[in-house]
Image (cartoon, rainbow, N blue to C red; front, top):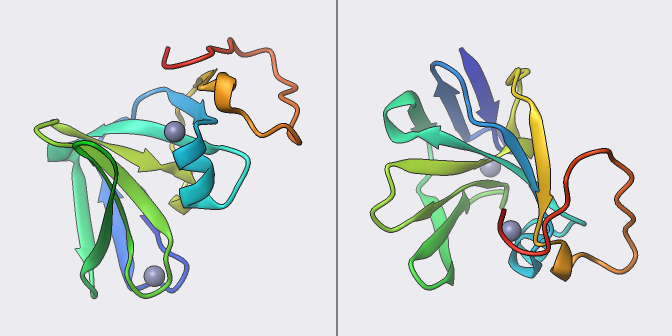
Length: 129
Ligand SMILES: [Zn+2]
Ligand SMILES: [Zn+2]
């Protein structure tokens, strides 16, 4: 079982099975939402994701049809989801256990922060992979 939580602990979640490959997203909306150079994410099927929350999640539509969900108490970004999708895009910084997934690539490098240098062997895509 893979587990995760927000900073204040009011939101926790459990994932059964494996998560998707890890993608590092440098798009501007991820940078703003997370307040960081990039956001590391993986797809998780809806039916493998169990949310256990003591507070309602906050939600922000950062682009048409794409919502970003976060703890309404402490602001930790937890996942994003597109309308109609059968999976969430988990924000891996919220994990408490090792997801045992492999890193796959950097995306939206065209929007990368000028002050951050990518020093990895992974493929870099200017936009979405
Ligand atoms: Zn919280
Ligand atoms: Zn992004």
